[in-house]
Length: 471
Ligand SMILES: *Cc1c(COP(=O)(O)O)cnc(C)c1O
Image (cartoon, rainbow, N blue to C red; front, side, top):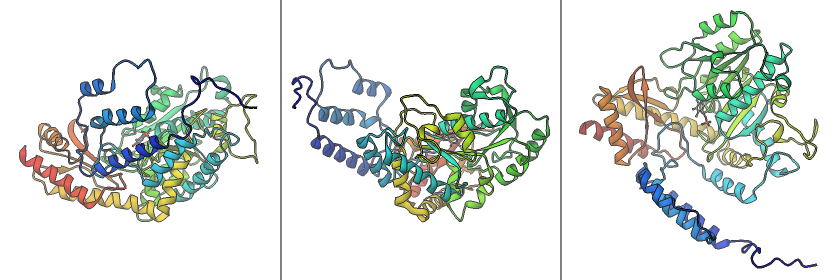
């Protein structure tokens, strides 16, 4: 029997082919503009508010008009982050296969909390998780979760750690919470990423539980101090090591840290947001030697693997603790059990979620093992070229040993450092971010984009030479 919708509630044409074709064209125009456009946004805050703001229209607006208007209004407020000349923070770009798979992820609109909900999305996560473990040298039987980023990956991993170290002293934290529980000590290096502190806070452990260890000049945890700290009375303990300090790229001595932790009952977590990708390169793998000995690993796909935002990963060597910390069930849900298909809901803090596996799968498949290694090695080589070029600029001092893809540098005084950076950004040739190191201003460069070329490095260096002369 035919059902009749009133014309008012009838949905618009099922396949808005013109809308999607036009959107693809807008996307292609944007990508083609990346080499030419200034890297920084050109519009001011006020301009963007007036271009994008105003009251919500009462009536509907045709979708094609909505998209064209949005693209036009947002354009001067967009930063050319996917370009090879964006060197700010640690960002990365979008590999073509990953971007395209990300489009399909939206169109397919799967909600892969459960296998029964999105079978293909679930199996793609299962396959991709195994690929990642093999590529990065993590245990093949580690459990994993596709999450929004390294911040959420820390939350996931440290929730597993919290369960594990409290379970070992007979405290069921999922049941009892933290009120009256044995206290947890979290040992970190002084130059850890702030997202670790935030995860500790979210988990109710609290900042006061952090034991902050001194680090060497490049930001690596002093392992002798870790040994002393671990020898102190045995409260449940989590150690957070780091592969890839945000300014210098320095990697903690993970093998020595794993030696120090071995046999103490402490949980070893690694923040490998971008630095863990060194494990994919035969030439750089030595930097993360021992990483496979950790209990959990948090890292990103949206940075160095060049998957579009957002995409992070949590891996855990103790699936039972991971699952105990994350799983939830209800009568109306349809989870499998052991021997059943993998349900992402057992491993992620999310309930409904985006099918993030598709884009990671596409990135890995399009690069292959060799391609991931090339991407990582090429980025590091560009960073070294940039550092060598900078060292020849009068008044410029490179502050770090360029072990990975990060360069940290400054000019004679803070005024010059900030002035040079301002001029480079205003030139539109490159975008980098500033920081403060040992009380003095400095500039950070990160090469994390698959598109960065010799010519992009040359343009950035020219911009710095010119700015230094102008100052
Ligand atoms: C970027 C970064 C994080 C946070 O990752 P998100 O993906 O932004 O959540 C954590 N640690 C390090 C070392 C990072 O570089």
